[in-house]
Length: 136
Picture 1 (cartoon, one colour):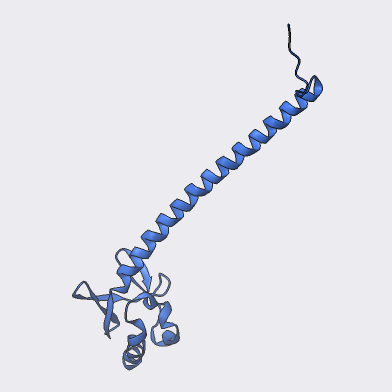
Picture 2 (spheres, one colour; picture 1 turned 30 degrees about the vertical axis):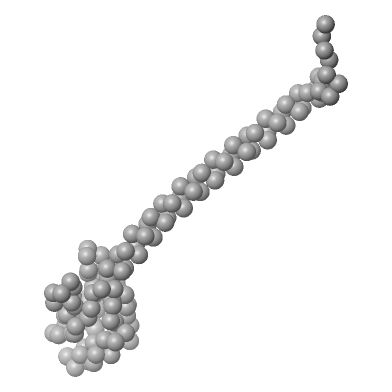
């Protein structure tokens, strides 16, 4: 004796229902894959931002001591070092570009870093500008 369900669709109705369920399952799987990919991308971006923030925290510890004979004197981990200032990977005349002093760069820890990122730049910028203009 065969039992026939009164609620289960038959024939083409059954195939349509089956296709709709399959389409819904495919959409759900796509959404799950998209969410997993977004999580991975966000995690990578977080790691990159963390490394970058650690680098800039290290840069903020560098202090400007002064400016002498075209070289910037900085205090790195308790040691004074002289560093040459450049403007966008090229040398320019400092006296003509004093107003854009914050955009000048120096090489620290293997990277080119703008002066405005250093620890005491705001206190020392006028002193540096004065020292540069005195060398003229």
